[in-house]
Picture 1 (cartoon, rainbow, N blue to C red):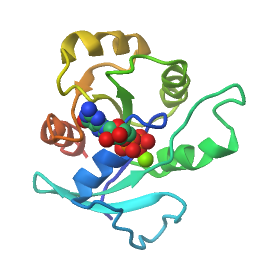
Picture 2 (picture 1 turned 120 degrees about the vertical axis):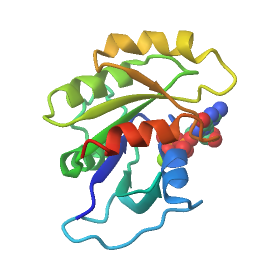
Picture 3 (picture 1 turned 90 degrees about the horizontal axis):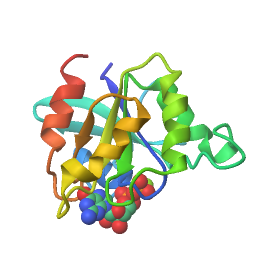
Picture 4 (picture 1 turned 180 degrees about the horizontal axis):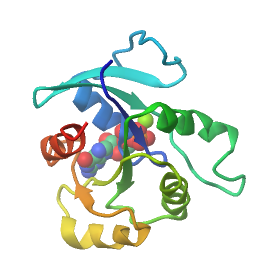
Length: 162
Ligand code: GDP
Ligand code: MG
C-alpha cells in the first residue's frame, strides 16, 4: 500500500493547486483505492521518484459551529486515514482564526504534520511566513504550488521518512 498524504487547510489556500501539481493533472485523477472511501479526492502521485496517494479535501473553516461541523468531516476523515498531513496556510492572507482551529485539531492527532505556507511567489516569504510559527507546529515550509517552488523539497522531506 502506498503512503497516503492528506492536504488540509481552510478554503482557498491552494490545496487543489498542489494536488494537481503532485498528480500532474488539471482535474483530479481519481481511482479506487482499497480501504479508502470516495468522498475525498484521491490521486496517484509520482514526484521526485516517490510514489504516494494524495488526498485533496474541501477545506475546514473552523467556524462557530466548531471543527466537527459536517462540512469539515471529510477533511477530518482524510486526516485520520493519512500517513502524513500537509497543513496549508496562505502566506499572502496571513494567519486566520480558521488556521488556529485547524492547528489545534491537528496537534491532537498522533500523526506527522507539516505546516506549509503557500503563495510565497512575489512576496518576501521569510517575513510573510514568520507569523505562522505561532501555530506551534514547527518549521514553516514555504512553497508556491502554482509555480512549483519549494514543492520538491517539501515532498522529499515529508515522504522519505515514511
Ligand atoms: P483550495 O481551495 O485550497 O483548493 O485552493 P485552490 O487550489 O483552489 O487555490 C485558490 C486560489 O489560490 C486560486 O486562485 C489559485 O490560483 C491561487 N493559488 C494557488 N496556489 C498559488 C500560488 O502558489 N501562488 C499564488 N499567487 N496563487 C496561488
Ligand atoms: Mg480545492
